[in-house]
Image 1 (cartoon, one colour):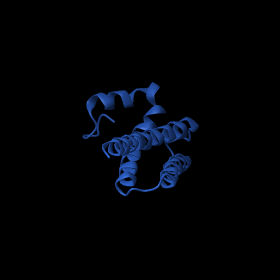
Image 2 (spheres, helix red, strand yellow; image 1 turned 120 degrees about the vertical axis):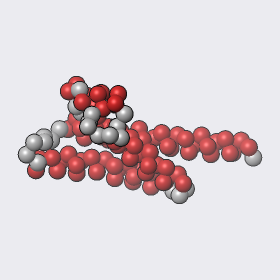
Image 3 (cartoon, helix red, strand yellow; image 1 turned 135 degrees about the vertical axis):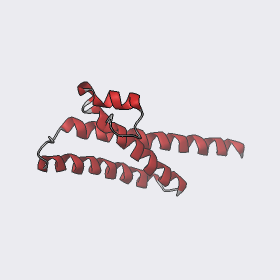
Image 4 (cartoon, one colour; image 1 turned 90 degrees about the vertical axis):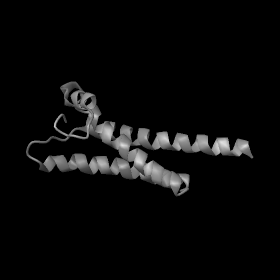
Length: 110
């Protein structure tokens, strides 16, 4: 990760440590959850679509991990799937919480 120019150096050092091998799968899914959640919030989508988006993010993680079975220097890991799903839920959950807070503040205003 240290060779990727847009990743901050402290994040790259953390990601390159072997002990963070599986948990780092969550990092891009948090960002993707923010993007998807932001779009859902801006579009005023109902909560069931948020649930479907979470399921789609989980599906993406599973497909990416299963795809590693076909790559020579990669390996399948259930922990990666778990951490990826956690990352997606954290990303979507952050935006959902912000949306609920925004709606509550607006409801208090009148």
